[in-house]
Image 1 (cartoon, helix red, strand yellow):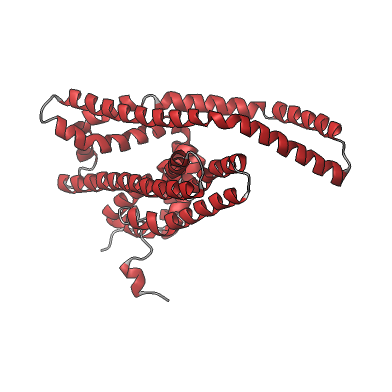
Image 2 (image 1 turned 180 degrees about the horizontal axis):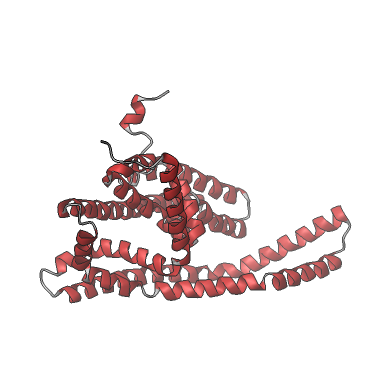
Length: 357
């Protein structure tokens, strides 16, 4: 006698209701989950360093030294960015001069084509600007308060990282008890796969940033754009925002070329350079470097970016792919969820190639 199995529509309803509850909970608890997720990823990256240091010193001291090393590296990174930005101060007078020239040109175009005097344009512009600021003051206030709250929560990341590394054995035993029907060995295997996929993703991302930064810098140097190193690696770091990062990063050097160069062809050259680099990044560099470590198809990646971007904003865009990769590892480890793991996995799977239409 076969056990009773609920109808498909009943099971589908349970899944959809559960998804709504989980997604709503992720949105409500984003102030907790975002820094905690970043902390989990950082803790996994620091784990090998902790293992090495714990051979010589106590665990709590090894964790503290690992976190201090990470903070020192980040401080150096941001200091280099600060120095590069300070070097751009020399361009500010040129920026002001160019802005005034463009402003006057636009005024003359409007006057000649729409017969509106420059005085009236200035008065109307001030009026619309005042109305815009008045109507959007609430948005600006909410944005500032949200940003302040996010920075406050991110300041807790070192504490979270310390506690996650300190209690890692305790957390492992918790999973043993929570997943009691599953053998401890199988739990260990899944946890190792999760760790490997996160570490491999981050390492692959760092390699991609390095390659793109070098390509951008060389291209800008050949075009004769000043501060090529800063602009090249600034755009490369924005690869953290998949699909749109390089495009956003190209806007600053394009504007810089328009300001500092006499011909607009330099700006066009910069745009073509970054367009070519983005094509290489999207079609060759990232798929072969990161894609070989994290098997997620493009459709699943885009859907994940949209979902997490709406839930957690900018942080969600950064975390979308590693979280999706973790979800895939978990799905692949549970028999009943393996079809869903296959759905978000590599579209060039051998089973797909056999059944091509």
